[in-house]
Amino acid sequence: MLVSAKEMLTKAKAGKYAVGQFNINNLEWTKSILLTAEELKSPVILGVSEGAGKYMCGYKTVVGMVNGMLEELGITVPVALHLDHGSYEGAKACIEAGFSSIMFDGSHYPIEENVAKTKELVAVCNEKGMSIEAEVGSIGGEEDGVVGAGECADPEECKMIADLGVTMLAAGIGNIHGKYPENWAGLSFETLDAVQQLTGDMPLVLHGGTGIPEDMIKKAISLGVSKINVNTECQLSFADATRKYIEAGKDLEGKGFDPRKLLAPGADAIKATVKEKMELFGSVGKA
Image 1: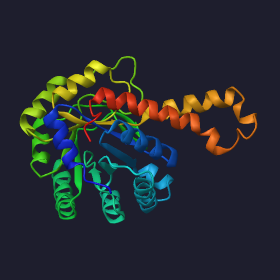
Image 2: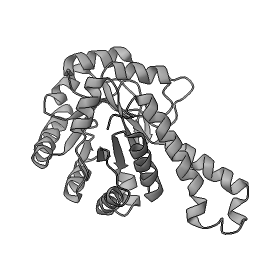
Image 3: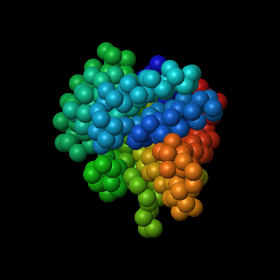
Image 4: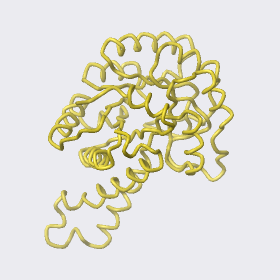
């Protein structure tokens, strides 16, 4: 059964570890992440961007697939199904479809409008026992056509949004989506520290977890980051393993062209990536 991310993140913040949000794009992705979480006894958040939701034939299809897997695979660890970078309309659609958590990204609205819309969604989520993530200061890079430069959030604005009763807060601290450029300045721990001091026990979220050096990830967790989003890294490892399978001509041997065989190396590669991240984040055995 899907759960809100609130309890797993409150525990993570208190225990100084982070829960990974791994984005899903299809059945293989979802199955690999769930099996790894179960094997490592780690709580997990399945992230769905609006683009991926559309690709998978809509949010109801996603909810049906995930709920079916939880039951059929006998998953016992806490699993939240979370809308990633949701628009106001997307958030409402996911609440309707049966997600257990949403992110409303109002960071591109004027702060007053971001506050009003966030407030409304917080009330609905509270009523339904769902968790809600808000964002302040845009995260750089590109994600489903949303491009930002990776600016740092204003800690006072973070407090303003945190005070609306959201479950977790994504604050821009110089992080970006996708691959990090050569000249990336690194995370701004000053910003993170200032945000954490003003928001107290609120679990903080780090987007763009791919390519941030391990020591920076650990330092961010020590400063209150309790949720880290991973997407690009799983995509890269999936593509790499699939390419190797094809280049080795395995699809031409026997029934190697069968999609179940063709996609197996990629699915295993995702498992390995997720395992590596869960160990780094410290969530292993915390379910």
